[in-house]
Amino acid sequence: MTDAPVVRTVHGAVRGRYEEVSGGAGIGTSRRVAVFRGIPYAAPPFGPRRFRPPVPPEPWDGVRDTVAFGPTAPKVPYTEVFARLLADPAVPGDDCLTVNVWTPEPAPGARLPVFVWIHGGALTRGSSAVPVYDGGAFARDGVVLVSLNYRLGVEGYGLFPDAPANPGLRDQIAALEWVRDNVAGFGGDPDRVTVFGESAGAISIGALLTSPRAQGLFRRAVLQSGPPETVPRDKVRRMVRRMADRLKVPATARAFAAVDRTALLAAQREAVRRSSPLLGGPAFGIVVDGDTVPAEPLDALTAGAAADIDLMAGWTADEYRLWLAPTGLTDRIDRLGPLAVAGAMARCRCGPDVVRGYRAALPGAPTSTLVGQMITDRILRLPVQRVAESRTAGPARTFVYEFAWPSHIPGLGACHALELGFVFDTVGTPEAAMLTGPGAPQGLADALHGAWVRFAVTGDPGWPAWDAGHPVRRFGTDGGPEVVHGPRDRELALWRPASAAR
Image (cartoon, rainbow, N blue to C red; front, side):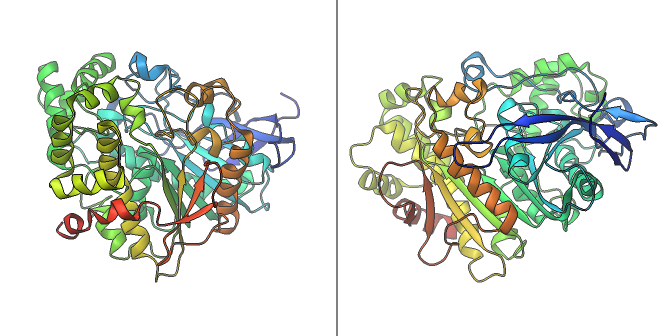
């Protein structure tokens, strides 16, 4: 290959390729950037390494071509209804612990800011190969973008008596260590690293912010639509036992490691069938383990952990619609009426006073909106606001946003994950249009992507930091101010007695 960028990493030299990235309408100009895909940061996590912490890859001689995405972690595909909305390519192979790098200047000494992307997917789906996550626009605008794969589902978040917990989170830490040790060769500054993630990626970052093993690996963080939380160990154990019963093996890492990967995924598919990120149920997730995650992240953050890390966090206006509208649950909840409200009260562990407060705050809203907003506030917005409030007197700043542009696909509104194509400035791709519908506004992508770039470069995305006035940058509404104050305060105040009692 001629005119191809070559960078030496601690494990060996890699060869990428140059790609032309067009400029957005109003942000950046067309620019040639260097792209490296599928660089191993850890050895394949199979064979004797299955369910074990990651270890470094074997070094290689010569120059390794890194022009294609590496294998994706084993995962269960989306059901048909969600596959129409969310792209999730699968790449076969064992060498799934890889990173990808987009850089405008692949040379030591450039010292450019670095963004590290951790994808979502309920810790059971997703990968860095999703086209919406293309990092070209960030490189075009002067930021080195690194994305990564990590183990998913039972391979990454199963809980066993004979294996360490949270191997998927340990993968993420290993990838961040790779960034620390190698990103300078790609033109990045290891002292100017910002991690950002959405949904399960944001939940992961909540844990990374408080993990002793991740200290010093980044200086800023963005949490998109994911609270700092863990899953109770019993919920994960129940999921593992479901799989063990179906496989007819003991619920141990040793027994699961002997199971064919296809059979394991089939058992996982059945086990997760009755669970939902919105409605709950047994799940795979990060657990407090006394090691990588020594304490509940929300408690640690509100007690002052990561006080020196600049933080940006937010949500979409209608998070819940992604889980309700495509599956027909919106209509079912509206038909059930009081029964659905009772279920939401149980999910949120609240009394009728909270429901009365929401009815007053959302007059005339259908039951599905009432239930959806209640659950979204309880599991997402309230924790984010608690973290923001705990940091107002700290050395680092916190910025809060809301993405409120409604999808052109009927029923979705400003749903979960809708902002991703705007953040990456990839709304023109067919994969982003699966969720936005046709004609997503490029101007909104300019605004959102530009804010993320500014945060990586300066630590200030362009609106006031959180203070007693509760400023929130709202993206995508027609008319009105760009910054609103306390837009969710009335509803979130309804939870204060319940949250204070935890």
